[in-house]
Image (cartoon, rainbow, N blue to C red; front, side, top):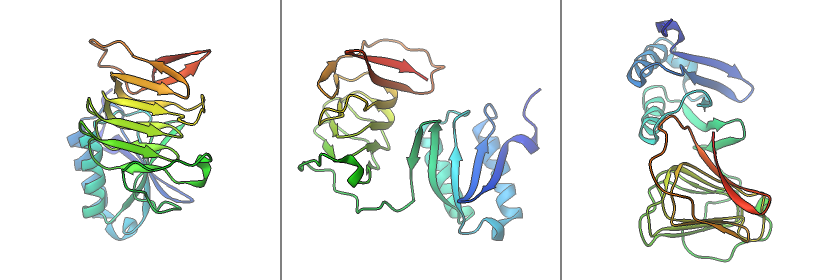
Length: 222
């Protein structure tokens, strides 16, 4: 049975604010309409509240997530602080970082990634871009060929990865590289190097993760 008007979105209260869960298969436009009705009917209730967007069961394109984020901010005065993509992958959005975010320019990196908040780049990294992060690095866009991302921790690309990515730059083999699609010229994790194969991929995938298994970098589809 298809989604009904009452099941297009679920909004749950938790200790940090609200959790918004969109229907896993309903059209995105229908979800926006339902959300508009909910916000108009309870504007004062949600105003200035913090919200986590749960996308573990619903894959959205980067542009759709940006549109949903802007819609909640402008129409409902709701602050989306996190987007949960998987059980162990949560993207921080509007929540203040414990430390000021460094600019995306070359600089020395720390040996203790826990001392730093993630570096968040809110745009596509084009050819010639070089980003270094002393902890995790989150890219809200694509990483194009000719761009290079270096991180002491994980690299999370909220788009397609086609440039060079080096996670665990100081030797941490537990670091991982996340992206909607991984087809880079080269990826590195700690001291290991790999060039994933290119070609047509299944459109049913949600995310791809590069991680170390044994002494090799392997690509896993979630």
